Image (tube, rainbow, N blue to C red; front, side, top):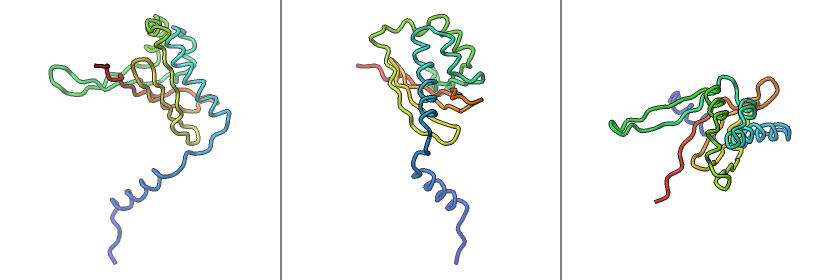
Length: 151
């Protein structure tokens, strides 16, 4: 009988992981993840740098994929925690009118000390990767994308 190849074993493992239900989390974890996400988006809109800083791991990477207009090639733009805190302090999010300040939150997955959440904001969508770090939930990575412009 032929032995399974590594490729088949990986495919089976991937399928098993993909169908596993969300890992159980405590009410405190759910609340901590939600608090970090709200500190992030509400801090941005309010220009509250302290709230933003509280939400972020110091080594945060916030990234967006853009397309160069001349070459048509994708490029990755990235900022760190301190840049985001400084942009918040400068009032970057305060330019969004209050009625447009959406902050729809959805917890996508939690496993042990890692979580993924989604924030749908006024003009963009943020996918937040969070970690329980020194006993509290903080955002470690953000991958974001602009919403399509209405025609």
